[in-house]
Length: 108
Image (tube, rainbow, N blue to C red; front, side, top):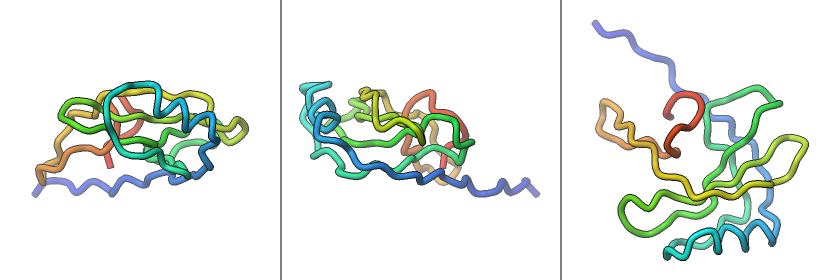
């Protein structure tokens, strides 16, 4: 019988997205996409408080476009906006990982 792994506990820390960061999220790529999220929620596996939080703030239209992610810490508000390709991991149930390529921790 295969071992059952514990479910991934996602960090979930939240931060509001300042207007300037929202502008950057819209301008970082000219590719069409959804509106920028007003509040970011850390989507990576639970981690120590002193590490960076990562949240998807704008989904992009089309295949293989990735998404726009924002980075912040518990002491520093959102300070980095990047377009990053999607994680390519597919779980045994056939679902794609919702995170970005090279993310820390396990896929949720």
